[in-house]
Image 1 (spheres, helix red, strand yellow):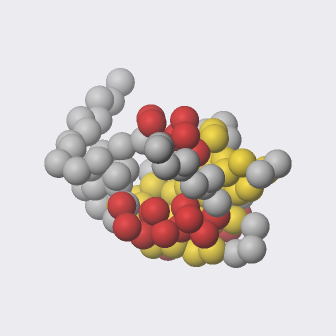
Image 2 (spheres, rainbow, N blue to C red):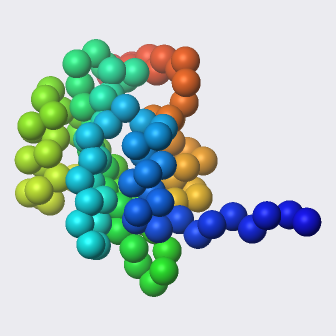
Image 3 (spheres, rainbow, N blue to C red):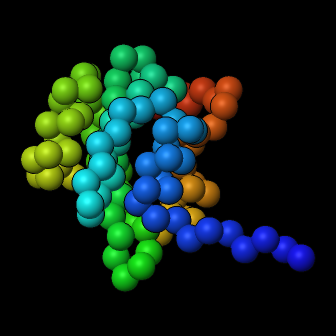
Amino acid sequence: MKKKAKKMTLPLFYKWLQDNVKCELRQTKSRVDAVIDASVIEAGTFAALFAIMEGGELLISELTDRFSSREDAWAALEAVQEETADLEPFAQWHQDQFWSAKNVKVEMIQF
């Protein structure tokens, strides 16, 4: 008999990030914020994302900028004035993200 996958919730997402991504986390009742070590893209930089529940579904959005410090990334999350990617359901975001990939190196191309 096939095991039914648990529906992703904020507490489960917090735990998943903790176990799989090099990041710092903050959780409130309605949101999970993460500042991620983005060294796979550019050494010494950080990325930021947040997750919310909407209609029983976990949605995730990443801020489009990279930051030179954790403090700057946290400030951007708190200000909520930074550009963000569209909210994506966890299943789609998980499929497309590379933060939890092991032994991956992303090459940044500048135009």
